[in-house]
Image (cartoon, rainbow, N blue to C red; front, side, top):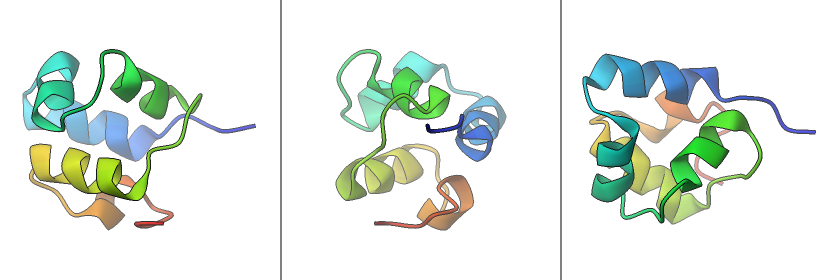
Length: 68
């Protein structure tokens, strides 16, 4: 069982961007970001890097488990 990623949720809220904007900037398919935030799916390494870049954050700040 996976848990919601509160660090990512907080980073999205603090960015001032809407979720769909983060998805577009991170080149994610529709609803993928929501599934990552809710813990129903895990982001791959490149997805984590793209999301972090879209949020102008470090991967480790929003994905405590790191890049892998």
